[in-house]
Length: 351
Image (cartoon, rainbow, N blue to C red):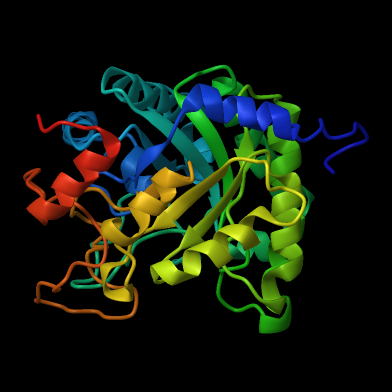
């Protein structure tokens, strides 16, 4: 807890079910514009690119997508809170205008551990997410002292309070892959992030947003058992990631729900890795049938370079098949038959 006042309660299962009935099936991508390599390049004033964002959201609408997951970063708040919120409002206006809602992610344990404001280094050729940045920095999370908690807590409270009544925000996905950061001893890898997970949920709940809170399960097994259980207990709507073959889906969805949470809505906030047997054809029909929200990784090929697989750099080569992404940089589909399948399942129409 962050103080003496008790944390506002988790939503009831009935309230979460009502949210699903009102919201409907969320389907779309984890979204970064093609001109940005990470959340800092996405949102900093010098590289903010609303024209590209609007263009890509219109391409997305043509596929029938209605929601995207978007990453924020604590350094944006520290640098220029008012300017950052203004740019965030502008992007949400574009989401409204193109028929999209958004899932906002505030913390992240993945990839580069020590982010810096300002111009971002050029992506390494052929390397997946070579400039993606953790939030907060690994050094901050490892230290996590009173000054860090005060500064980062201001970021969480400020952003959630600013948007707590905005209908464009479908869901707060507060912490991406807690425990995935490098350098933790494996027996307690997930547990290492649990104190920070507790804080971010407490800070977000203090704002009493109209939208539900979640943090997605991403690994199972002993090293993550305790933090996974806390993610379930803290989340209003349950969520998970899946990059494996379709035969795993019943087991993974059951694990994500947990024994006492079978009635709560479920959202898969990351999936789709073509080289791992995880495709739209294998997963999207299952998610639609079971009313599981479906947010795959990647919309347009760009500076994140996530068409390359995590562990397979290919400098100077075009990967075949692409790992993530759906559209080329000119808006044309990577695979026409894949785009047709997406439209059939979403009810979308080409524009």
